[in-house]
Image 1: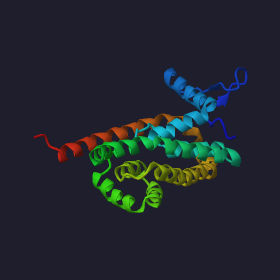
Image 2: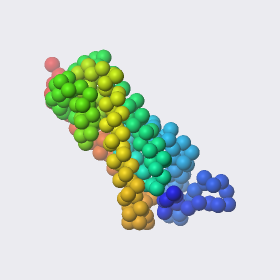
Image 3: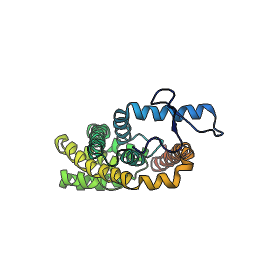
Image 4: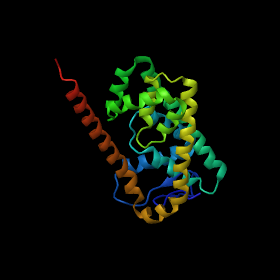
Length: 237
């Protein structure tokens, strides 16, 4: 439904999953990469979705914001309530699995590793300390609320691990918060996707090319800035 995007059309003379790009001045390797990306989404969409969300929740930067990816899934599934629910469920399970990586590292190695990981993802270690105290006092509810704060999802995993929140409280709290969070983005995609397609349709190919480049550049900048901050706080002896 609503697929393929306007930059693609179906080559009905061959496989029903074979898409061709319009004639435009793009190198063949880029056209092939975009085609393969859409094929992967079509053939293994929920497996791909699970791993994309889980990897980002583990703290690994991705070339495209996961929120945008989930909104795209919501746009594709609009009008189909069971499929929309399936998207939310897969995302919530992926969030629950992915957050266990920073959670277990912080729980095993303590505040020093939590601070180091926070710096790596360009988060002030003082924020980890503040949230650790809150989560230590309030447990489940604090994790749910913290996971709904924009930009604090990965931090909550470090904080909960440092605060020694039991996994039987942490994982259900993550699942509940993730269900609410991803429902919001799926709804955004289903409601606003057609409008976005109508406005950006003629330029969507360029958006798909430019977005990863911009996001990668942003994360490289953040990583270099985080390294400088860490070096300034920990000068060599």
